[in-house]
Each structure stands twice: as structure tokens, then as C-alpha cells.
Amino acid sequence: MSRLVCVSNRITLPRRTAAPGGLAVGVLAAMRDNGGLWFGWSGELSADTTAPTAITERDGVRYATIDLTQMQYDRYYKGFCNTSLWPLFHYLSDRFRYDHEWHDGYLAVNRLFAARLAPLLEPGDRIWVHDYHLIPLARELRALGVTQPIGFFLHIPFPHIEVLRLLPVAAEIIRDLTHYDLVGFQTEADERSFRAGLARVYAGDAPRVRTGAFPIGIDVDAVIAEAGAAMRTDPVRRMIGGLLGRRLMIGVDRLDYSKGLVERFSAYQRFLERNAELRRKLIYLQIAPLSRDDIQAYSQIRQALEQATGRTNGRFADTDWTPIRYLNKNFPHGTLMGFMRAAQVGIVTPLRDGMNLVAKEFVAAQDPADPGALILSSLAGAAHELDGAVIVNPYDLRGVAQAVAAAFAMPLAERQQRHAAMLAALRRRDLHAWYRGFLGAIDAARP
Ligand code: GDG
Figure: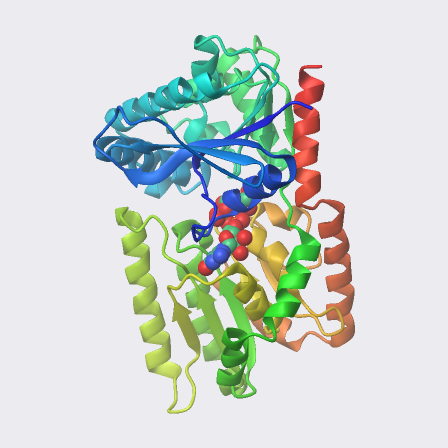
């Protein structure tokens, strides 16, 4: 069988506490089950550009990492990836900024990745490149004479061409994707956006590119087991004890403006204003581990959330009750699954999201006999599959506030019925189906 080579911006080394993020969860599962090589940035900065690629091996997986320089990090990672591509691909064009030097840095790091990866490749390899950081990588690898099949999967949305056009190098982005044997997206809507972009750039003369929708899922049984086991642990028991019998709504999101937290906090405030009789009966727990904290837009959103929490708690809290518990803390994954199982309502309201694994984890973590209700943004990829959720528009504060009231009031039979339907959907398209589907499609692209 051919070896699997995964390439992503950041890699998760064994025994390191993983930075929270959906991409790492998916790639790690594919690597663990198939073995192979995982290549990417170590997460470290270094001025020494001649240091050799570091290789570690554990449980059949080889991890190959390189460091970046401060300048590469600033231009490629903070600049082009996370201040140009990230906001634009999430349709948040008011946060989009562009600088030619960032784009030069992006191309240079992709060239560096190709130069460092090429000598590690073997003839029968299948190469799987992940996410927006590495769009030009196939072109760079081909230029070095690499002939093995190369697939690309985009974890975030692909924007409509009229939005992508804000980027001065939009056509290059689309052209670079045509160098892959397969380009995978989270949803068919993203795939259609890319196809519309291709048609625009090539004006009816587009090269043949294989594309497909491969919605990422979760390891359902692993989450069920984690959630069950976590209920007996100290952190989960303490959290439940601290509720003093009150009902719980939970949110778990990387602290990112795309996750709609400011809007969610406003909607919750509105819910408290309109539902005086429910006030002291519930607690909203928001876990938001810091992410990309050295980028200005992220420190701004952090400040805005601190202010919103202070405002709501200051206005509504009593000596024995605070309406919002807001934590910038990173928890072990199992503990989070236990927190979710203990909650009556899960709230996931991104302004845009490629998929959103938290929504799927919340469903799997529930007790089927007495499951919690899920509130889910219509603008998350997961909404295409989880139609048993209470679907909301995250910008509609009144609608979200009403959804919170409806979710807490939902009768047991309805919760059970919605939960069973969603769990069945999760099982149909789980994490294993995701990577098997993608790898099978690469093989079919190049028999
Ligand atoms: C990108 C796309 C797409 C969260 N806090 C902690 C923690 N997490 C875990 C969650 C979940 C993962 O991180 C987050 O995944 P999401 O899918 O919700 O969001 P992104 O990080 O934005 O992921 C997204 C995904 O890629 C996969 O393709 O679904 O649309 O944006 O698993 O549980 N894990 C730990 N501690 C935390 O504090 N250990």
C-alpha cells in the first residue's frame, strides 16, 4: 500500500499538548490509522535558516518539522494567511487586509516547504496537503519534478468569486489549485464557489480539475466514550457542583472573530432582558481558548468579549449567581466532552465556518436518554447535516435569543427525536469516512 504523506502548516508532535483546532484532530486520526509522514512547521521561530529538518518517529508516524524565521512568520502566517485569506474566505471582508510583502512571504514559505519536503518523498507516496496556508504547494512540488499524486483539502469555506475578487491575487489562488490531482471542500456549496471561480478566471477554457465535497466528521464512539468517562472526573464534577442545580448552556470556540462570540453575547443579554423569570435558573459557560493572540484583530475581539461579559454580569448578576462564566482556558479534550454532556443547551453560532466540529461533538457527547438541545448557525458547514438542531442566523440577535428560550423549553420527546436523527447523520459521515473518502478519490484520480 502506498505511504500517506500529510502536509499542514502546523503539526502536532506526540506528547505535546495540542493547540485546539479542528484540522489537527482530523489529520492526526488519518495519520494514526494509516501511518506515514506528517510534514509542517514546528511552531518554533528561529533565525537559523540552515537547520536541518527535524525528524521524530512514534507509533508508525514520522513527524518532519522545520522552523520559520520571524519575518516568514509575520508575512506568511500573521499577514497573508490570517489577515488576508482567513477573513476573506469567511466572507468577513471588513477585516480583510492585503500587503504585497505578505503575499511574497506566502510564496516564499510555500517554496521552502516544497524544497524541504521533496527529498523526503518516496516513489509510491500519496501526498495530502491541508488548508489555505499551502495552496501554491503542488505547483512548487511539480516544479521540483515531484510526480506523485497530490490532493488538497480546504478546511475553511471557499468564498464566492465576487468576494474572492477583493484579493489582488485571486486568479493566482484559483490557478494554483488546478495543479492538484484532487481538490476537496467541506460542502458542495464551497465546491460550487470554486467551480464558479475557475470558470471566471479561465473564461470557458478551464483545465480539468477533479473536485469533491468531503464533509469532515468526528470519531463518534471515541467522543461518546470520552464524555462518559469524564463525568466521573474531578474537573467535571466540580463544574457541575458549581452550578448549584442551575441549568447549563455551553459554548466552546477558539477565540476567533469568525465564531460570532460578540454577537452571541449580545443575543444572550437580550435573552436575559426578555426572560426575567428564567434569569437565576441558568448559567452560560463559554470556553474560549486564546488563538492567534499576537494578531491585532484577535486582541481586539478579546477586549470586546471581556467588556461584554463585564457589562452583562455587572447588570444582571446577584450575590449568589453570575449569568456568564467566561474562560480563556485550554482544557483536555475529554474534559470538554464531559462539560458538554452536563449541558442542557449547546450554542454554536459562527458568522461562517467550514464545518464546525464542536457542534458535532456536542451531539455525540449527550446522554441519549436525556439529550441537550443544539443551537446552530445556518452559516456553518455542519448545518447542512445537522438539521435536528435549532438553526439560527447568528446576526439575528432576537432570533438567537428566542432560540435560547426554545432550546431550554424543548420537551424530552422532541429532544430525543432530534438527537437520534443527528447522531445517525454523524455516524453516516464520521472521521474515518472523511479520510477514506478523500484518499479513495485521490487514488481514483490517478489509477
Ligand atoms: C477548522 C475549521 C472545521 C476547542 N477548544 C479546546 C479544544 N477544542 C477542539 C474542539 C474541536 C476543535 O478544537 C475545534 O474544531 P472546529 O471545527 O470547531 O473549529 P476550527 O478550529 O476553526 O477548525 C472548521 C475544522 O477545521 C476541521 O476541518 O470544522 O470549520 O474552521 O475538536 O473540541 N481541544 C482541546 N482543548 C480546548 O480547550 N484539547
